[in-house]
Each structure stands twice: as structure tokens, then as C-alpha cells.
Amino acid sequence: MIDGLNLPASLSARAADVVVRRATPDDLDPIVRLLSDDPISAGRGDVARDEDRGAYADALERIIANPANELLVAADDAGRVVATLQLTLIPGMARRGSTRLLVEAVRVASAERSSGIGTALMRWVVDAAAVELGVSLVQLTSDAARVDAHRFYRRLGFVDSHVGFKYAVPSATIGGR
Image 1 (cartoon, one colour):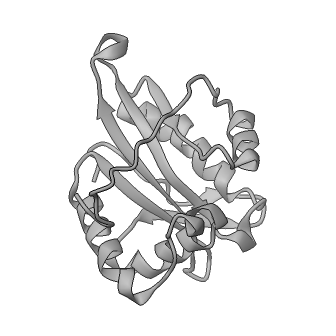
Image 2 (cartoon, one colour):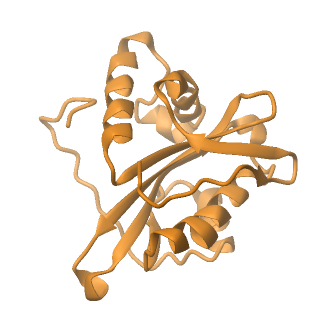
């Protein structure tokens, strides 16, 4: 849990209000469903299979236990988890020792996309969470194939200023530390 991060009681989206809260182990299956609901994530292996549940449970436990991380969910008025995102504080030397807030794994249920939930979540991140946490920069990466997501982030004021690189470690295991 990130110290000093106050969650909103609710966020208003065009379609309805959602409650934002910290993820708990009970949210494991809904979060994995959100990941597998996304074709790009599913193509990388994020699918809701029983044999992978342990790896996801371990990851959720590590995220919840790490004081530099928050895994959040947004639930609709029926209590269904309809969105998730992870926030990570990164202290740094650059920019005169400033701290960055990394936004990762933003997912909105396919049936709820274009409802304003993603916009409400991201506006809260940049307008409230980043200010409360005293960060100088909010950053995220997005798969190059996510053209719609890029348009969404630009509309929110994010600038695609850098080129990201990734290296898949051949000996790494899924769910590894």
C-alpha cells in the first residue's frame, strides 16, 4: 500500500459511478478476467486458466505486500470489478531526485469501454493521486499495437515522448520474481 494515497469514495463516469478500492486476494479472478478480456494480453498468455491461478495469486500477493505499489480495482454498483490498474512509485536520481508514478496494466472490461470509466480513473491518477504523492511525472507504457489506447492517453494529455525497449529473459519463469 502506498503511504499517503487516499482513494476516492467513487468516481463518476458517463455511464455510472464506480467505487475505487485496493485489490484484495478476493479480486484475483476478476482481475485475471480483465487481463484475458484484452486480445493483446491474451496473446501474451494472460488467459484465465486454472493451471495459471497460482502464478497470478503469487503476483497479487507480492504487489499487495510491496509498499511502493497499489493494485486498484473499480467496481460498479452491483459490486462487479469492471476496471483495474497498478500504480508504482519509482524514486529516481534524474530530474533532481524526483519520484515518478508508473501506471501499469490499465484494463477496463470490454463491455464498459467508452463508458468513461478509464477516463475517470486516469484523471484521478493525474489530478489527485500524483499530487497527493508529490510525484513530478506520471508515466506509462503501452504496447505499440494499442492504437486506440495511444489516442486515449494523448487525449488525456500524455505525450509519447520516449521509445520503450523490452528484453524477454529466456530463463525466466512465468510468475518469477
